[in-house]
Length: 248
Image (cartoon, rainbow, N blue to C red; front, side, top):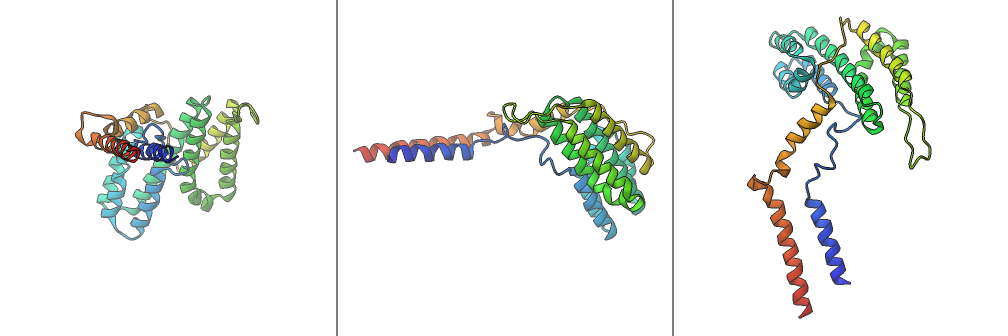
């Protein structure tokens, strides 16, 4: 009985130490969007006239924005920060959020047959819109409600694969495209963008970037990555020696 208990503890210990990258989802928390969170923090710091902190916050998302939207937004935003131009900082970031909604919705459409992926991407699109919602609401309360309803319809359009076929609901890509068009056209008009076209990078590119960041967990040529393995091996040896002593 003791041997079985020790074996179970050993297994639990190994799984606790084992790298979790293979279980991680590269998009992070589906109910949060880094760009939207940065926008909210930047607005708060702009109101406090702490422009050095505004810049520091923006730099945490600059790489992602440059990747998907090109260098132009960063050039405008960084110049506005340098000039302490609060209005331009906020309005430019709001436009970035609109483009981010467009990017997420485009990738929902591209991954429409993959329920889990499309649902997570749609959640991120809605998380981005929630940061814009107060602005839309100030101008047009009914439009804000309409857009939230369109996000709900977009979610329904994904259907549901059910559990082993039980509770399955068919998807409807035409309904999704209609909701997507309504959302993007309204946001384009509200925030005065000439276009909501997104960059050429895809969610697959994000997967590869995330994998590259996690490479250090799997690159055994790096000495530090042997440490967890050595700890696990040492623990197993200790368990075996303990069991042998008890047997004697």
